[in-house]
Length: 122
Image (tube, rainbow, N blue to C red; front, side, top):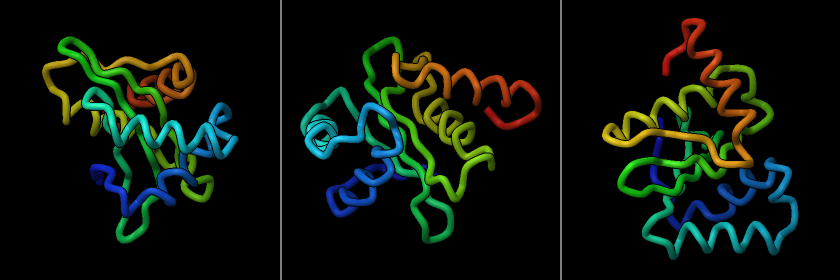
């Protein structure tokens, strides 16, 4: 289930974002989280299964499109289609906008949308 980020989830979100190669440094992570907390155009979502938060997806939205800037899944939950489900949930949450990958998420996005074409939900 996709849930909106709130500050009480900051450490969990930073931990999940740290799985992205460009988010390894603490300073970079702090700047990324701050950008989601202060920008009206950016939104950070978390993916929750039962009581566990296992994924994160960050987007930048304008009138026409939603760009996925960050997306990561806890390694213990990988290869279960969670990335595909997160992209589908973002698409459903923004029905009037095209969902596109950002520079750092293109490969993951393409993998997930390719899987969706093979019968997964997107």
